[in-house]
Amino acid sequence: MSEPSSSVYELGKGMDAHNLTMREIRSRNQKTHDPKFPTRVWIDEDNTPSGIYNSLTIILNTGGCRWARAGGCTMCGYVAESVKGGSVSHENLLTQVTVALDYEKQQNISCGQVKIYTSGSFFDEREVPSVTRKSIAEIFSNRDRIVIESLPDFVTESKISDFTNMNLSVDIAIGLETTSDRIRKDCINKYFTFEDFTIASDVANQAGAGIKAYLLLKPPFLSESESITDMIDSINQVSPYAHTVSMNPSNVQRHTLVERLYFSHGYRPPWLWSISHVLRETVKTNVIVVSDPVGSGSNRGPHNCGSCDEKVFHSIKDFNLRQDPSVLSEPSCNCQDTWNFILEHETGYNLPLLH
Image (cartoon, rainbow, N blue to C red; front, side):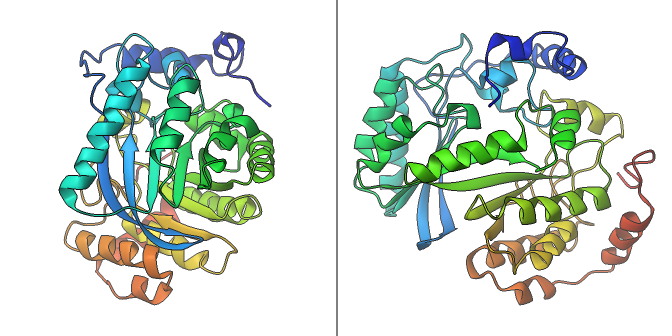
């Protein structure tokens, strides 16, 4: 398995240009963040193998993803929201959890599932120390399910057991992005391989945990049709290893290579029609496929023509819970003709055909 050691980040590994460019872009970020507050907290509904749950989602503010600090993924700007200095104390991380629990009380919603993200790897002990991990497992031991985000390198049975020993159903969320090693390396700039993902999946299964795979719709440098084909192929290929796929349509985040391409008229986020199309095409796959289009309807997020965006977005959210493809056919708009033209004529050398 690829190790997240310093050698992975040094020059001569075939990812030099992306990493150098990403570091230069990220260096422009001047914002600072309070280590006592999580990056974000919200409550929503999730479709799980155990049914639909109210979910408390917590994005802990850590020192940031170590791969992102080396350069990182072309579309990911979350490290710009991390505390500078490389680490956050155990006490401050637990204070962030308390803030999230207070938010849950204020909403007066009981959440059977908790999702914990760091915009990096919860299992990376440079981001979240082992003592913090064990404390968080105890804090949420009264819940039914917990989702934990990690790169595959850090997934071990001993770390998972901190949660399974609390009788929690555990899912490991891994940002695989695509099953194509070429696209993951050349378009997304992520260092691990599909084989690394399958190994982590085996480790998780042996520890009694499930896998939730995150796949990226429309990385930079792919046309709309290429990105759809890659997503459908990836969902089919990942289904033996994951019980759920979260299809994440790319959006234009600050301090990223995608943002630079976007302002140079070299990138357009995916069409909402593309999301609906993939969901229809993969509904019979032996895996739950869901999508939450962040920034839907905005220029920086997945969007259609503007007039139909809200209807299509709500049909996608409805599908997430019901898994009924008929809801995706209800919205219609003249811009579907434009989308079909894009699929037929946009190529890698003329994208985006329509900004």
